[in-house]
Length: 354
Ligand code: DCP
Ligand code: CA
Ligand code: CA
Image (cartoon, rainbow, N blue to C red; front, side):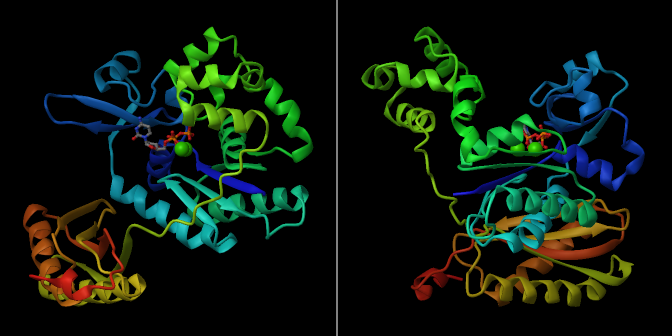
C-alpha cells in the first residue's frame, strides 16, 4: 500500500492571509470569541510568526494578547475555510484518487497504490499535488507518503510547513526503531506516561513488553494498534468517505440586496446542489451569502425530515430574508449548503410530514 497524506499548513490563518496578503509576515491568530466577556474564548490556530511568539492553538485569547499584544487577532470564519477546503478536497485531491478519506477540514488520506509504480513516482505525484493546490488556491500544504496511513501522517507532521516527506518500505524498520512513542497519533499524555513507566521510549520498544501486560495497561484496542505499528503489520485501508455537505454558490451579475434580484441565483444554486446530491436528501439547509467585501454570512436550519427541493426553495428564501435583515451590506455571491444528506430507499417514510 502507498498512502499519500495531505495536511494544510496553519490552515485557518493561512486562508486569512490569502484573502488579505498584507497579513503575510506578521503574526496572525484566528480566534473563537465565545462572547461571554471581552476576549473570552480561545485561539483556533495561528500562523508560524505568531507561534514563534508563543501563541498556540487552544490558548485563551487574553493569555495570547498578554504575550503578544501586537499580533493580529481575527475572528474565525469557518464557512470561508470550509469553502476553500471543499475546493481543495473535491476539486483537486479527489482527481488523484477515488480512494480518498477526508479526515478533517484540513486533512486527507489518498490511497495511491494503483496510481504510481514506485516511491519515486509517488514523490513526483506529491510535488504535482502541492503545485496544483498552490497554483489554484495559493495555499501551502505538507504531504507525507508512506506504506500506511499512520506513518504517512507522522511523516507529514515531521515535514511541516510546506513540506513533502517520504518513507520508503526499506526505511520502515529504522523508522520504527527511532520514532519517539509520543509522536504516534493516538498516544496522548496519559498513555504516554503509562508507556514510559513500562520502559517504552520508541515505537519499537512496544515489542519488548508482554502483550498481555500492554493490554492491561492501555486497553486492548490501543495495545493492538501500537503493536501492529511496531511490527509493521498495520494496514488500515483508506476509507472512502462520502461528502457530508454539498455546497453550491453562484456569483451575481451585480452586487445586490434586493431579494427579488437574488432569488433566481439562489434557485440556481439549489438546483445545482440537488443535482450534485444525486438523489440524496438533506436534513440541513444553509443559505450562504458572500458579501461585497468577501465576508461570509450564513443562516442554517435543521429539519427532522428530509428537505425536498421545493421545500428548499421555500425555506431558503426565509433564510435569505433573515440574512438581509441582519446585515447592511450588498451580496456578491449567494449559495446553499446541504448537510446530513441521506440516501433512503424508504423515501415515503423519510418525507413524512414535509
Ligand atoms: N483547530 C481549532 N482548534 C484547535 C486546533 C485546530 O480550531 N485546538 C483548527 C484550526 C486549524 C485547523 O483546525 O487551522 C487544522 O488544525 P491543525 O492541527 O492541522 O493545525 P494548523 O493547520 O493550524 O497548523 P499546522 O501547520 O501545524 O498543520
Ligand atoms: Ca491537521
Ligand atoms: Ca494543518
